[in-house]
Length: 374
Image (cartoon, rainbow, N blue to C red):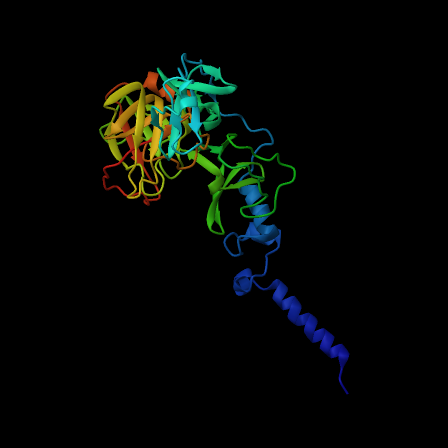
C-alpha cells in the first residue's frame, strides 16, 4: 500500500533542502535569492529579482531631492540669424527675374533637385499668386517653398566643474525601476532636451543603463552624455571636444568645462573624422553645396549657413537652421550646431583653437575622405 504520509515528508525535506542550500548551488537554474541573503552574500546571486533591487537601492542610496547641475545664464547674442529661410519643396523649382515673368514662362533658372534651402526676403503678390524674393532679381512661387522655423535649443554654460557625468535626453523616455526593468510609475516621464545627472551605470540586455534619479534608470540610446576629461597631450588654453558616440560637444578652458551641448555629426558614408585639429577659418555665413554619391542623390544646396568654424578641410562647426535633431547623426561630415550654440561658439573660439574629435566606441573610420558638408 502506498504511504502518502511518507511521500509528503520526503517531498518537504527535498524542498527545504533546496531552500536552505547556498545560492551558488542553483544560481544557474535561474532561481532568485531572498533579499536579505543577497545583501549579506554579494556576488552569490543572479543580478535581478527582489534581492538585486534591494541591493541596488542600498548601493545607490540617493536622497529624495537631488541638487541641480550648476549652470550660468547665457546672454543672447545678436544677431542670431540674419536671414529667414525656406525649404524648396518642388523639384526643379523655376526662378523668375520678376513675378510678372511667370505668366510668360520666362524662367531665369531652376533650383534643381535635392536637399535645397534658400534665404528669403519680402513676399510679392502678382495675378493673385504670391511670390517670394530669394535673391536680388530672383523670385519663386510661394507654393514651391516651405518656411523654416529654426530650433530654439541651446546647450548650457557651466558655473563649476561638474561632480559627475550629465546628459541630455534625446528621446522621450519613461524611467525604469531597475536596469531593463519595469516602468517607474512614480517618476515623471523624461522629455527630449531634459538634462539629467548620472549617478550609476549597469549593463542589462544589450545596452548600458544609467541611473538619473532615485529608482530611475534610462537606457543609453535615449541619452547624449557629457563626461569631463583632461585635455589631450600638449593642449592648453581653449579647446573643444566632440564625442561622436554620444553626439555631444564639450568646450574647455584648460581642464575646466565651460560649455556643453548636443551636436549632429556625419552620417553613414560621410562620417566626421576623429582626430586632433585646429580651427583655421571663421565665416559669419557662407553657401554650402555639393554631392558625393555617384548618382548625385545626396545633392544639397544651402544658402547663408551661419557662424562657420572650419577645422578639417571642408569640415566645420556651423549653425543649422534646417533641422532640430541634435543628438543624432545628420550631416555630410560637418558638426551641426543649433543656431544659438553656433553663435555662442563663434564668439568664444578664435582661429587656432584645438578641436578634438573622438569616438569612444572605435567605430568611426579615421581615414580622410574628400567630401565634407553640412
